[in-house]
Structure formats: structure tokens, C-alpha cells
Image 1 (tube, rainbow over the protein chains, first blue to last red):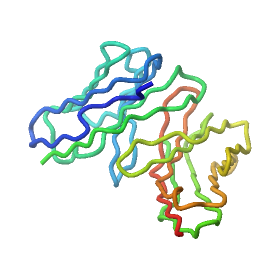
Image 2 (image 1 turned 60 degrees about the horizontal axis):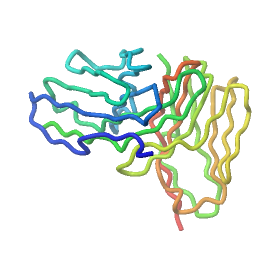
Image 3 (image 1 turned 45 degrees about the vertical axis):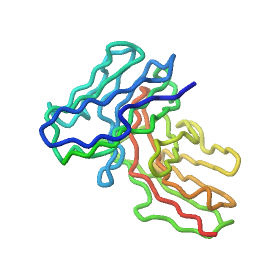
Length: 115
Length: 111
């Protein structure tokens, strides 16, 4: 299996621009997570989907952030407009169904720098 | 909201010694606790899972304990090697699948 695939791996953008991060989860996994990692705050859960439906988006920092999962094999995290404080590593992760403490498999991350 | 704290300082130990990392939590009653390893520039990788009704779990040189009374997990690496140098993260979840991560502990094993 190819694992969780994220793109782009690195993105540098100017403040105010729209950023779209993409994720392909592991085939057969029906839970998908978006995390953000910074030195100050560690790994924060932004949003969690189960069977393509957003279950908990309480971690999304503000309305500038949105996430979609149109089908089982694709998800996007969008920031519009982007700000310098959004600079972080954004991880997508997937796992099997809820309820068993299933292992979360992480992608390699999208390194975002907003200047 | 739940709070998860790991060793606040980076941990340096001599090769061959046992490394012990701590994970303390408050305002939470997790059903599962996991430990992950993260190397620089990479995503976290799963190591071990322990359930609330388990006291201890072992895997090769790794051992995890889970004390729900103390609200603490300990992660041990015995006979440590320089290749064990990485950041180690604990993660907690309830009966759902929402895992919340600690800030991680950076471990350096000195040859």
C-alpha cells in the first residue's frame, strides 16, 4: 500500500492567498483526520471525518479554514485567506473504523510557509 | 478540555541505558493510549497501543504502562541505541477515534 499521500509537500505563499492541501487516505480506511503541527502547540486535531462525513471540526481555528471529503479517497483542507500564523506542517492521517483505538497512519505532511 | 503533558525537557541518555518517557493527562478518561515515533521531517509512526484495562504492554525493547488512577503512561526503551533518537508522542482517545496528542519528548541517545 502506498500509505497516506499528501500534496504539496512544501508550499510557500504570500499572505492573503488561498492555499489548498490535498490528501489521499489509505484504501479501505474510513476515518480521516487533519492535524496541524507547530513547535509551540504540538500536534493539534483540526477536523475528523468518518465515512466522508465531518464528525468533529471543533479544532478548526476559524472560518478561514475549511475541509471537504467528497469521496472516500480524497480530502482537501483549504485556507482562505492565508496568514503568516498559519505557517505549520499539516498532516493528513487515516485509520479503520472507530471504536477500537485503531492505529492512525500519517502522511508525510505538507509544509506551509505564509510570508 | 483535555490536557496532555509529556516530559517538558528533551531527554539525553547514554547508549545501552533505559529511556523512560512520561505522559500525564487531565480532564480526560481515555479508553486507549498510543505511542508514536516521529523523525525530523516525517509524519508520526505508530509504535504501541494500550487499553484502559491493561496495565502493561511490551514489544521487543519497548514497554508501555498505563495507570488510569495516576492518569499517567510511561514509555520505556531498554538497551537504547542511537537509532532510537527521535521525538516520541503519546496520544489518547476515548471510545471514538479522535486521538489527541501530547507535545512530544525529544530523545537523544548518545553513543
